[in-house]
Amino acid sequence: MVFDFQPLDDIMLDRKFILENVELIKQNCANRGVRVDIDRVVALDAQRKAAQTRVDDLNRRANEVARSIGKAKDPAQREARKEEGRQLRESTVAAQAELDRIEAELGTLLRAIPNLTHPAAPVGMESVEQFRGKTPVPSFGFKPLDHVELGEKLDLMDFEAAARVTGHGFYFLKNEAVLLELALQRYALDILIDEGFTPTTTPDLARNEVLEGIGFIPRGPETQIYSIEGTDLSLVATAEITLGGLLSGQTIDEEALPIKVCGISHCFRTEAGAHGKATRGLFRVHQFTKVEMFAFTRPDESDAMLDDLLRIECRIFDGLGIPYRVIDTASGDLGGPAYRKFDLEAWMPGRGEFGEITSTSNCTDYQARRLNIRCRRKGEKGTRFVHTLNGTAIAISRALVAILENYQQADGAVVVPEVLRPWVGKERIEPRPRA
RNA sequence: GGAGAGGUGGCUGAGUGGUCGAAAGCGUCGGUUUGCUAAACCGAUGAGGGCCCCAAAGCCCUCCGCAGGUUCGAAUCCUGUCCUCUCCGCCA
Image (cartoon, rainbow, N blue to C red; front, side, top):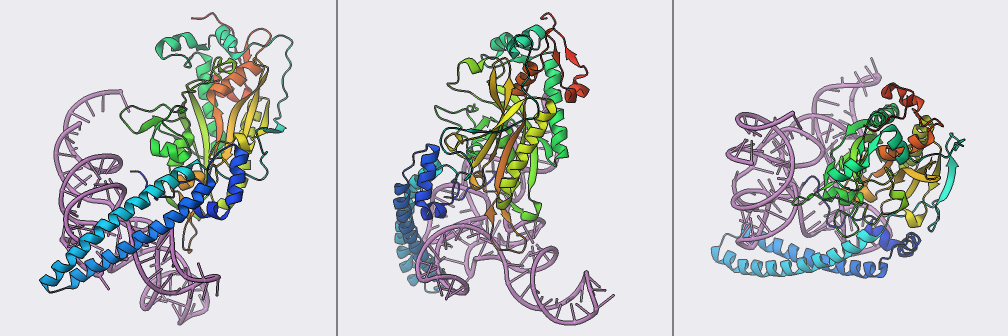
């Protein structure tokens, strides 16, 4: 075990808070489109308390008997009390089993309750555009191609070969696309180091308990996760998983917060059931590389940190000269862990619409509770859960879509964004016959 | 992959069946002393849950990597498992 779960602590919201705010929780579940029987939670918790009291009482009596045997000098007296101890043990085992059963049912319900929602987040299913990036949506004097067509003309990617090797949803990047992938990583990394992030490369596999702590469900019919047969490991869907797991089970001095790390990892997604127009080319693939930001903060700092992660995402895409809009995600579309979420959607001329390229979330203590990451104020008793936030710096495959489509020229070439030229080594990518 | 050793409180580290939640040291916090700082000295100092309840105090339970087992009683014995270290093998 890497870290230890508290029996009923690996839930998303504080149990006491739920019980003291039943109506609020019910309303929040409704706003998020999640159905959980909160009344059942209340009833089970009452049962849990009663069962806990029985177990505690039996344990206390068993402890008394055991201590009295230890002290007794007379062998006959000891033997007599041993029988009493045996009977108490049987009762304790039974009472504990009942408690375990109640906690298991309660835990299942509690785990299904989503995080609270930021009061300013739009309620319902309609997410709201907040503002646009600095780069205007380009107007071409010709019909813009999509990145797949551009990729063919410039010989930048090979989907057919990848299908032979691995299957649908995979790709080879070739030629300048490879340089662009590496350039994007360096570009993002330089900005993040400047912003005070500790750079890391992370494992591409993680334990299922870490996946679950972050809020992913590794098994089951609708899972997005590839799991490794015969192990409790899965391929990560994002470095958010490994970066969050980085401090699992740890208690951190508040002076050390916020902790800002970024990680480069491959990301693997089954994309079960996702087919249609938006799956063309690089937009929705089973594997891609991503530079991810992650922050651990004090509870009172997370709102400001979310704004900061969003600002950095804007800095990155303004710097790349990609037109985008910022979306404030509505409650019904937040997923379980997020308290608030902003997405950047880049203009993709080949599709003629905006497409998601980044996502940044404040997960408050949802993940920290499940991963048991706490903080402690110096000189004070007790600990509390940290807040965790994540944000995409660059998801390479989708950034490539946006760059190729926005920077295409009438003559069929693609101009390399200025900030990437030091690493790509040229200003233009020219059409070339496919090798 | 093979063979050993080990996982104890914020840290180091004692503890091999009976008031051990756990010695000692370090650190931290409070105090005394002090022109200031340091040193010295004194005291306090794990977490989670429950009971009680205005609150405090108090009481109880659980936790010595994790999960089981043996026992009246487990940090201590047994099994499994995860992790760490050393050596060997293999390999980029």
